[in-house]
Amino acid sequence: MTDRIGFGGRLATAFAERGRLCVGIDPHADLLDRWGLPDTAEGAREFGLRVVGAVAGRAGIVKPQVAFFERHGAAGYAALERVLAEARDARLVIIADAKRGDIGTSVAAYGEAWLTPGSPLEADAMTISAYQGLGSIEPVRRQAEAAGKGLLVLAATSNPEARPIQGAVLQESSRAGATVAGAIVSGVSAWNRETAAPSGIGSMGVVIGATVDLVAAGIEAADDSGPALPVLAPGFGHQGAEPADFRRIFGGLADGVIVSESRSVLAAGPDGIADEILRRLDLVGAARG
Ligand SMILES: O=C(O)c1cc(=O)[nH]c(=O)n1[C@@H]1O[C@H](COP(=O)(O)O)[C@@H](O)[C@H]1O
Image (tube, rainbow, N blue to C red; front, side):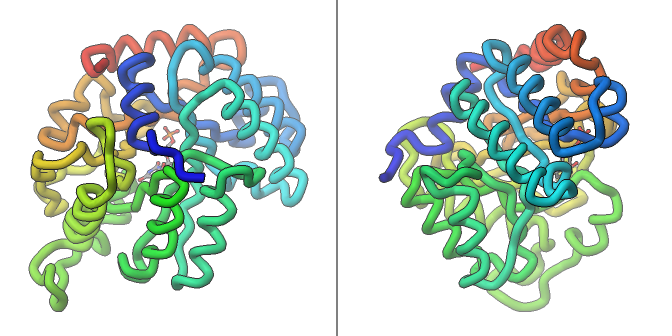
């Protein structure tokens, strides 16, 4: 069933009501230890449930990093399903940080897993890579549009090793002369403008690290004729970027920025996380609305 509000609409509501902080759910082994939990699927489940409990009623968006559950095998997936169900019940916007990508027929199976309403792994949006060509993820784009879900396509990631590849300049195609990152941002922006967006934010977005120099990466601000482009922005907190700087960092893309933090929030531990979420929300406070 099509959700008319769509990912962009749910994001706009979350921004207006709870700010734009997204809390990562990354059950690293050392964090589990700090939280007094075992490094097992049960530990990851308990960690995830407690993070969801702390976010609910404070911030509006969570981003489970799938790999930290996947490393526990089938039991890890069962744990993730529980955490996702709890986050859905709490009406949080869920971004599955799955970073999938493949040729069309295979990538569609990923879309079914993460974006199909009723799937045990159902999220509101997923991270995806287009390094097999933007066209390779078209099937997931269609699935997302039909189900009112969102895509966040890796464009310029926060890790410094990404620069030589994501900053490489295209030789052929209609986007010759653009960097890989710039071409992904302009391609996804075009998709975003084509997607019906009843709110001011669209549902097709990108991932750009807050540690990235947008000009050096060849990324131009979206043209402002359509709905804002959702921009999942990790790199705040532990990786060094300051949440309060997000407008300066993202310039013309700032309206769609999701300020994502994992370790900087999670390191507060089970007793401190609720206050830390409120503190980080205050830092991004100017962003509300
Ligand atoms: O897609 C992501 O979320 C992501 C993209 C990126 O460019 N850099 C990046 O760090 N991430 C993820 O964002 C989170 C960052 O975690 P912290 O550095 O602890 O805030 C991790 O879950 C990463 O997998």
